[in-house]
Length: 322
Image 1 (cartoon, helix red, strand yellow):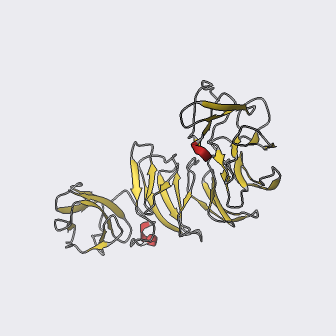
Image 2: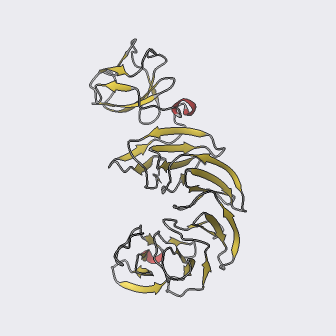
Image 3: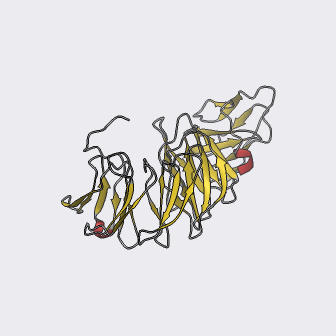
């Protein structure tokens, strides 16, 4: 594996109590900076860090290590820089940032193992998954967490044990996000963005032109944002706002609408012998719009300027009305 300069900071910092900023890099240390930009302390961790630290409810900082000469560990640090404990891990926590649950249990991936570690540094349990974990787990509540390992998405009990798994393709770095209704959002290395229900149902699958390595973020209004390796930032409305999830899950790139963007009437291409039928149009809030539908065309001229989703039985296409 190629080495990077010791000053390289590969992952996001974390902000703790008193707005103190924590980050780690390839210098085998965790750093704490004041809001004014002054170094407060730096502590050695024995190996490189290739993930973000996590801050617990009491202000304690957790960081996991990857390549280096010593054993891989999860370290705990107090806000003053003291370390009450470290725990040996069975493999590298490469890209795998820790997450802290509502009961202050820390969850972290190390190679293909998912750990639950109590706040006193004792291991609560360790589960073995089918592939390497390279992202941060998402804690949904005090009984459920979600994690991606390789091409599979896992629902895991906080008391240990896989409840269900779902294939999403690729070898994934995107950490999942969970909304208030329990729906899970996850990007894939297989050129797709998924919305998965808490019962494992795929509510929505949106194809994108390139891999999604970044992790989705949920805004206060429920809108979901995620970046793609094609240089595009996507914004999605919350799941369940009017679009039929079962139909939307069968998206295809083979249907095109032109011209797009449009000022009015559009035509369809790529439908083959199947003509346009049962077309529905939704605005960005997920509300269905009433528009005139022809045999192979659609009139959007009466709609306000904006972004719309045009759905038929087996496909969905985004259209910009300008």
